[in-house]
Image 1 (cartoon, rainbow, N blue to C red):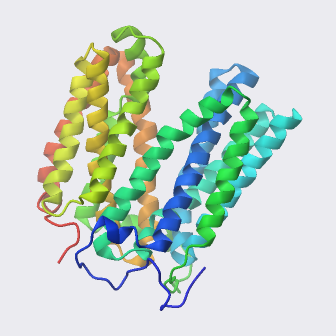
Image 2 (cartoon, rainbow, N blue to C red; image 1 turned 90 degrees about the vertical axis):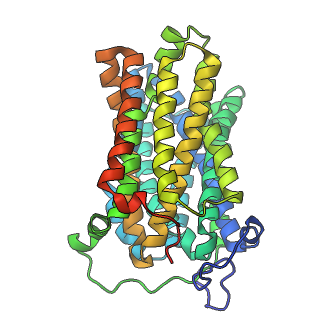
Image 3 (cartoon, helix red, strand yellow; image 1 turned 30 degrees about the horizontal axis):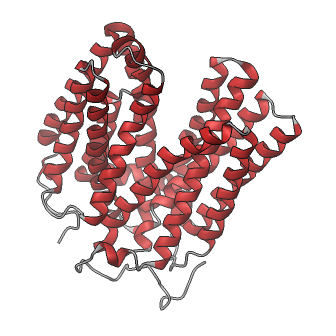
Length: 422
């Protein structure tokens, strides 16, 4: 997969910050192969995750076991992500992504065989969930740190926004497709998921880029934790990553949606699906817009403003008694969050040397995972104390407070003008 310097295809490490357009991005063959690989593998992963939960509950009827499926995927990722970032900085990232796709392919194939053969069990599902968590731990930092090797810096904001649009398509389409296939048999979900991982692995195998020479430093705890130290010494990046952490931690409302649908909105169960999809639809629309119209100026102001808009959306959602107003608030919150995501990821990739990108992406991944998981816990805990409306309103106020505090705590982030520094 490593190519001579003269056959870079989509790689543009030498390209500087010359003007670029979305049409330019669509000429980057290797980036497009990578994007297509991410899309089909994420679609497959979403389908398999939905099917895993359904099959576990169908086998055991236990909400506890259903929760264990998520925990079995989260804990290995939490433990292995930092070492995986170190591996991504010392080895060929494309091959790491291929290996992660291959591991998920094996899991989907085993689930297909077990379902058809009638030997699927609680223990097997938990074991395979652990393997999925391990594979994704290595996939995340290698995949995130690969994009800057496939496009020149001027195209990176568009590429990351386009990456995000593909992810949102997978988040929306994967569960929907799995739900349709459930009507003819859960084994069809695993079969299509297996084919998706095959296609993703083959597409990734066609990606060509020049791999930078790996670090010659001996592996140690110091090198594994170098990403943490790197971010701590750069307030602008630390501020961007921690801003997202606290915004999602305080402002998340996804875990409380069943309570809102049943007790606040007094709506039918189908509304739950509508509201769960609303942030992803908003994020998809914004990511497509940003891919065609990347942010050029005042990115620090826009980053913190987008977080403030997210907090305001949570206040509107918490106070709403209308299904469509709630949908609109969640839709706008998804779009605002996508602005934050694209600015943060672009800053991290552009400000990080290539030999550190894997480890820094790993730290970023831990922040994202922790904010999502802990955010659901925080929502449930405060809802038990204040009720669902009080929990969401308190979270929205907290997000606005964080946005204001970050202006004072991280002035360099607030004053940042361009994504690509002169």
